[in-house]
Structures are given as C-alpha cells and as structure tokens.
Image (cartoon, rainbow, N blue to C red; front, side, top):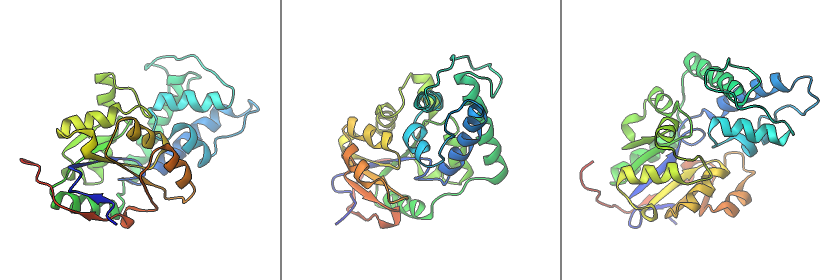
Length: 250
C-alpha cells in the first residue's frame, strides 16, 4: 500500500527537526542544559531529555516550551522581554539561553539531514509533488540551508513568519495552513509529515489529506494515531510513493 498516493495528493509539508534534519537531539540537549541549571537547588526534578522534551517542548514555539515545561514542575516565571540577559529568571531569559546554546552547537557541528527524507523529497518532486518545510524555530531556514536542502522546497514557513503574521504555534494548524497557502494547494490535497504529537494534532485540526507520523523511538505509535496520524513509520525509508500529479509551473 502506498504511503503517499499522488493521485490524491498534490503537496507534502514536512516538519524540520527530527523529520528533515537530525537537530531534535540538539534542541533537547540545549533545553536540558538550560532547564537543569535553572532548577538546580529548587527541589524540582531535572529535565528528562526524552520524556520531557516530547511532552512539553517538541514542536512548540520556544517561549511556549519554557512555560509548558516549568508549569509541569509547578514553577511560574515573569515573562520578561526580548532584551533580557540569556539565562535570566524569566520566560524570555531562559528561552534566549536555549537559543544561544542551540546556535552555538549548530555553528560548531553543522547540520545533518536524514538520508531517507532526502531520497523521499527527490522522489516526490520527480513525480510532480510540491514540497514545503515548516518549523516553529526562527532558525529553520538557516538549518535547512546548512543541510544543503533549500532547493528541495518550494516554500519555507518558520518562527520568523509566525511572529510577523501572528500565527499561533502547534498544536494549532496555522503554520501548516500557511505552507499550503504558499504552495497554492488546499489542505485536503496536501500531506503532513511530523514527528511530534502537537504537530500531528495540528495536521488533524487543519484538515490535511494525509498525516504521516515518524516515530523513531518506536514508543509513540498509539499516541500518534490517537492524535490523528493516518500512518506511522519508524523511518521515512519505510514510506512509498505512487502516482503522478501535474502541478503547473514549479
């Protein structure tokens, strides 16, 4: 059975971290460093790099991740502002510290793409599908460019676009719907590829024609299906493509 049937779909929208690029682990490590430093001495459990990342920050805008995780530990902080010192005891301060650490790691080590995702992108485009990449991160375009993949996407929607257009983050569908709008494809003729539960839920809320969830850990299939995934794969090497749909000028 085909995962992506292009007789029914005209476009595919990909999440970035953990789907296109192997950067989810860099985000998770940066969050752990920042949260553990803040929580030290407060009598709260440290950040679990797997369970807490998936439950509270994966797929969410950075400041939402700060608020959601700290709420899980019974901690609330003043909002502060974008001029706060990185690491200051405010929502913005912790978010800025995480952002600085993430950028430092990316600048130092670069960005790796998942080879099966790259192969899938080439196959989709060969068959005439349009493609977009989406992220709540303001660094999405830089990350995708660092991986050498910008030429494989017809549209990029990231945290900068979300801020400029006032788009709410996942699990709201606004980022994905903006990508579909830029591709000039109705949501029900586009597929979503996600590895985070808020993103899967966003695809369902947006009325997308197909939601493919990537469960690299093998531990989230039931939750992903409950959130709205039509198909769950351990890796996009397990996905198949059939059909050919003309999309006009590329």
